[in-house]
Length: 223
Length: 94
Image 1 (cartoon, rainbow over the protein chains, first blue to last red):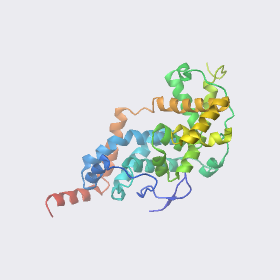
Image 2: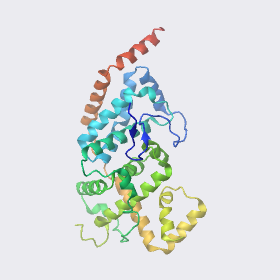
Image 3: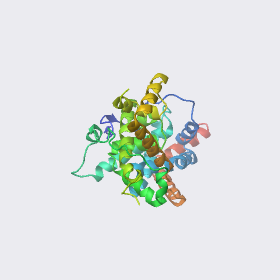
Image 4: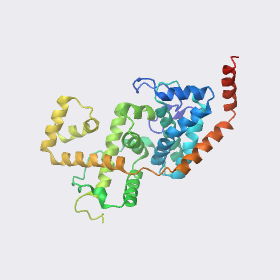
């Protein structure tokens, strides 16, 4: 198998490599038993794992790719690849983190394929200083999201996160939307903990600046 | 603590991973800097609004379709029969 370059970290990264130093060892997770059963040929056990994590994998893929059809394809590919490589999962990380790592790689590869000559590398994305220093200090209205219908709010949030560089969007998705710990996020992305924290800060600040246009007091952009 | 130093601690502050001495400095800065106070409030709201928003729809129909497709690919991949054979060999004590 070719060694892929992590689009996030620009370091060699095998998504199936289950050697995770960043994630602390924990008690044996119930998933480990399901994985062992699946490795032994119990398809019901593997199907249970698919059922447990398909929603998370689909959401993660859709957040990163911003495309529903891609997310469906990626979800299928992630579980099929996980199935094929099940023997490589040694239980050093959570099974869900292992899956997320595959999903992130598949999603970012999909983004790379989608882009053509306008491709901007993830490294350029993360080197930019844009959004790393707050510029908007307007206060927001109380419960500003209530000024919008559910569909309007969903569109605002979708447009706003879609404008982030993929490297930042991925970190924000895993850490703040999917609630992975900083260590799990680092593990899933093949990044160091400080790198995750740095990208998370910039992602949060950039989203804040962009949402402020809609949520600030006396705002002309909103209704 | 100035605003730049405060910003560098913002992630740890949000994540509750900041040592008590530094936390006291952060709070002291927040008490005197309105801009940073706004940044904290609105960044926290940013995180909350994304967490609270209804995620992308994942209807049962999609769940069933994806799972069926995954399991079908697994079954026809050529790997599963080997695994099942291994399992049945174990069961029969071979």
